[in-house]
Image 1 (cartoon, one colour):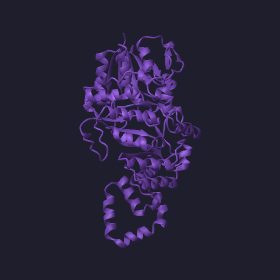
Image 2 (tube, rainbow, N blue to C red):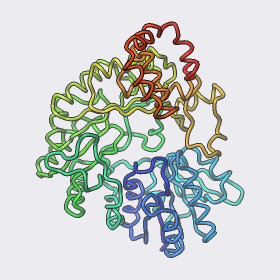
Image 3 (cartoon, rainbow, N blue to C red):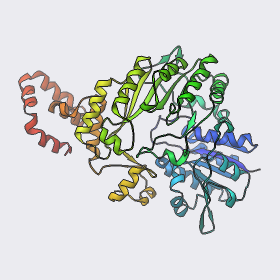
Image 4 (cartoon, helix red, strand yellow):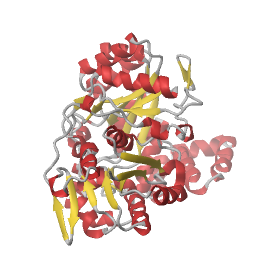
Length: 487
């Protein structure tokens, strides 16, 4: 029987912002359930030295490496280390990047033997069971100088057929994960968030949306749900075995099936499971009944993917949600006592100062609890925006051979201007209302550091000078804009 080592590469993009590797835990659970000798190491917790040591001491036959586009260079570094220790180890890459960019990976990186496309549980199991590679759907592999792409693998129809993630494999290191403390909330219903890390879980795979910036479809295909019983069995097991009562549902759109959502909430309540959790969803997938049930089951926060409040931009990105629906959903969320967060993308195709102001005006109206704003439209393979950027000549596939984690769409605005837009959104202050004094404060604070305090101190003491600057804003806007590279 072959030995399998699963590795989450060290050094994610944002230090401190990571959680247990749920995808690898699912793979480990599937392999373990079938009697495969499998171990897992999370490099984000253990670091490079321990990853190297584990490869040497465990001596695996197969190494599976998690590979997002943004961390592909770290994944490839792990692959090189593996081959340097034992060139006979079979290196398998899985995740969204090998799902889409498999040809490039196998053409340019000899350290990669197999790329798994889409859901990986069954494909990796068959690799570990020594099934002939040409008979394994959903993989791409190297045969001498030839790169062979097998037929697509059909998605897992019944998610209840999958074993639970192998949480026991990280039981000894779970308390090393960063504590996920929701902003402004240290506890909920008697559950203290300050000591125990949050556990990621997933109730569904896939999303009914087809947003232009997202590549989720490449992995998950058709939206599917576990049974409520199966999901709550896992929550209860984690609660009783590992004393975890803080969860985050990593579903793209947890409430897209109303009955499945209601069933989940009822199952949690009927079992008297004292937990707290947050979810992500769309504003067109909630109503008062769903929200009241979520609240009763322990949901303390819902993060909605709003992206922008401009109807024109929403249509262009294929979001298919209108602003009134979003306003209603957020109002109802706050009414039932659940925190409402919104997720925004700044710098969409067609973004202008007017569309940014539309978004800020929307934020002011709804008075959301939290704002998560991405300062730029990130371009990833497999998305509509990637195809658009390629047509414009901004990018081609060779970009992914370089070291940058991703590209930001800057065809219409510079990175500095996008940063200013993001700053304004987080401050909830419309660009059209921003005074010269505020803009100078932003520039000094961002690029000079500390000097703004002295300048503003002078302005506050000199009322006439302050008023002169305010009234002069329209006339000198162009010069200020040139200074801070806004135009």
